[in-house]
Structure formats: C-alpha cells, structure tokens
Image (tube, rainbow, N blue to C red; front, side, top):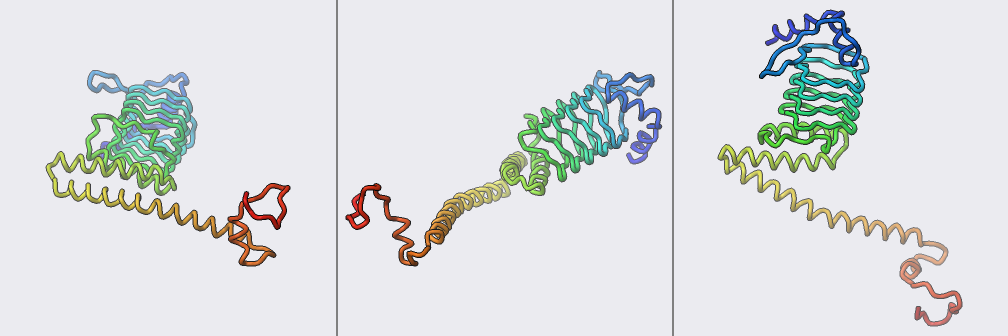
Amino acid sequence: MEDRVADLRARWTPEATVAAVALLESRPVAFDLPTMEHDGVTYLDLRGLRIEETQVDKAYLKNVNLRWALFRDVGFKNARFVNCNLSQAAFKDCYLRRAQFEKCDLVNSHFESCDFSQAAIVESRIDFASFKNCEVRLEAIRFRKDASAQAMVRVCRSLKLNAMSMGNFADAGHLTYLEKTQERRALRARGDMARWLGSLAQSLVLRLRRETLAPRALQGRQHRHLRHAAVLGTGAAGKGAVGAHLLQPRCSKGRSASAPSAC
C-alpha cells in the first residue's frame, strides 16, 4: 500500500501539478491528465495530488478521484464536490466556507484546523473521518440513511471531541446523544443485550442528573440575584431597611409619607 501511494504521488511532476491546479480553477488545461474507470463511470484520476497555499474558490469537481490527496492552506470557498472520492485525503488549514460535498466518499479522510462555516456534507460516506480543531457545526452534516450504526458511532465521537475542543458544547451534547443512540443500535444488532442495557441505563442516569441539576442551578441564580439586589439597596437608611426597601410597594405621589400604606 505504501509503495502504491508513493508511486501515485511521484507521478505529480511540477508540470502535472500546475495543470491539475488550473483544472481546479476552471482554467484551460493543455495537459493530458489521467482518467480511470470505476463502475462504468469515468473519473478524473488525481489520486495522490499535493496542493499547498493556493485558492480554488468556486471550483466545481464532479467524478474526480482525489484519494490520498494532500491539501494544505488551500481555499475552497464556495467549492462544490459531486460524487468525488476523497477517501484518505488530508485537509489542513483549509478554508471550506460554503463548500458542498454531495454524494462523496470521505471514508478515513482527515480534516485539521479547517473552516466549514456554512458548508454542507450531504449524503456522503464519512466513516472513520476525523475532524480536529475544525469549525464545523452539526447542522452542516446530513448523514446517509444507510450508514451503519458502528460507523455513526465513530463519526459522532470524532465530531463530539472536535466540538468540545472548539467550545461548542451545544453540539457536543447533541453528538453525545447521537453517539449513545447509535451505540445501542450497534449493540442490539450484534445481540449484545447486556451492554445494550448498560448503555441505556447510563443514558437514563445522565438524563435524570441533568433534569435534577437544572432547577437547582436556576434556583441558585435567583438567590444570587436577590442577594445582589439587597447589596445595592444598602445605603444611609441602614442595614435593617434593606428588606423593607426592596419589598415595600410604591405609593402615588399625592400620598403622605405618614399615611397608612394601602397602595
């Protein structure tokens, strides 16, 4: 395998790489780039391509094989990948704002320090894909309906750890729920009912704990607010007047201060 990958990368001479970049930028190419057949479909063969420090914004790639490709500091703003093979490809420090991946193979692909703002990964295989220090939201990914439970567990775990590292705890919470749900689905499919029940019990305990702690946290915040108001109300009237000042209803302007408080 290593020899094969090395051979694929070695074929990318400076001239061939320039031609591939021109193709990604939708510029005319006077170079015969390789193609390959797979399942009756002709793919542009860019396997093992290495591109660094360039912009290919608005690139439109359809039926392109980019397996084992390496992209570092490449701008793919508004790019569109359709039915492309990006398995085992690596993206580092890439700008993927509003990029779209449609029906692509992202199995075992690696994304590090990439910006997926407003991007979309739709109906694509992302088994074993890893995300590290990436700006990617859960709503950007539309999982395939035929994705296996075990694959979903791995993807959700990777996305969860990435969300936690980026301080996106809302997505991390949702991904934890998805991870546990898919974990139970996988365990049940294997007939491992003991671990399935253990996972279910763990989820119920965590849910009850959140529901128990939430009212207490809210109650604590209310108490702190009241204490804060009491401190602010302390003045020349003295310490004993704090409660009365906070709780006493206001009277109309025409009422005497010595009159009974009926308002």
